[in-house]
Amino acid sequence: MPSTNVKPLSEAARNKLKDAIQQLEPFLNEYSLNRLLGEETGEEAEAFYKGLLSDLRHLLVFSEVSVEKLGVLLRRPNFDIDFAERALYEVYHQCVNAFFYPKNECYSEDGRYAYTGQDAIRFRFKPTRDARNIVLGMSKIFEELRDELAYYENDYMTQRRMQGQK
Image (cartoon, rainbow, N blue to C red; front, side, top):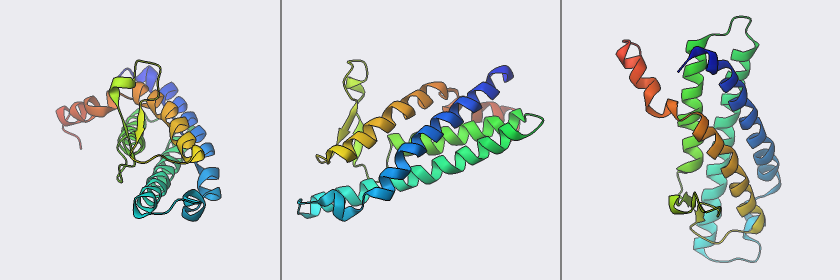
């Protein structure tokens, strides 16, 4: 990747992750398992919401760590391109992948809907409106990040291996 693109890409990734944090944190502070369950009963609903909350908490932590790394990087007087590329690689593999491939599989992306204008996220269980809205709101941010950081999916590590670095 041309080194001239790395700094603006780092700034953009940091801003998008900050937007995601600003949406996720209030949601997780406000909603508990009991509140999301509401009148729902059954093991399926409870397992779904436990998994969803767990996945969103992990995503929040990964995003906060990445924002901090990118912030340190951008505040340095001399921009370190190698550190920036590593940080962007981690954003892709920790944050973007944590969103699109959640551990508990409460939702998944159905690529068939990606170009139809419909939401590509499909839930395993019908969530409350607020839970649905937070995931769909996050999907827009992480889709943009995925598109911008696609280089870091494979090419970054291949380039490093070819250079003899870890």
